[in-house]
Image (cartoon, rainbow, N blue to C red):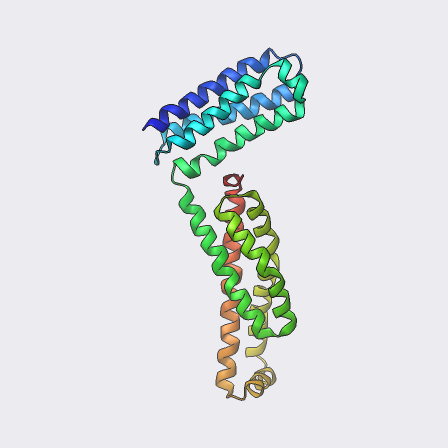
Length: 242
C-alpha cells in the first residue's frame, strides 16, 4: 500500500527532527528531553503502523507527512526564539498525538469506537425511560442532560476531544440512577406495601406492579452495564480523540 511508504517517510522525517533538536540552543534541556521522548514514541508508532496497515488512506498519510515536514522546518533556533518554546512543544506534542490517532484510521481500530458509541447511546436511552417513570424531578434532571448527550454523541463521532469530555461529564448521573433503579427494584419486590402503592397508582393488579418494578430494575442494570463499558472503552481509547 502507498500509505505504508508515506508513513515510513513520516517516521524518517521525525528521526531527522530528533537530530536537529540535539543541536538546538534556544530549547531548554528539559524540553529537549521531553521532545525527544515524544518524537521517538511517535516515530516508533508510525513505523509499527506502516508494518500493520489494514486500510490505505494516502490523503491522511500525506497530511501526517506534511505536519512532520513542517515540524522539521520549524526545528530551528530562529523559529523557537520567535514563537517561543511553549508553542514549539505544542507542535511536538501534537505530532505525538497524531501517531496515537493514526491506528484508528489505518489499522481498523475505529470499529472498536463504533461499538463504544453504540454502548454510550444504548446506555443513555434506558436512563431517560427510567427517569420518566420515577417522576417530574428525575425527568427534569434527564431533560437537562439531553443537549450535552447529543453534543457528546455528535462530537465523539467526529473524534473530537470535546465529545470525549462531554461523554465523561454526562455519564455519572445516569450510572448513579441505574444503581438506584436496581436498588429500588430489590426494595419494591421485598416490600408488599410498595407494590400495592404502585398497583394503586396505575389502577392495575399486583402482577402489573411487579412487571413495572422488574422493568425498572432491568433498565437500570442496562444503563449501569452499558455506560460502565462505554466509560471504560472511552478512557482506554482516549488517544483516538483530538
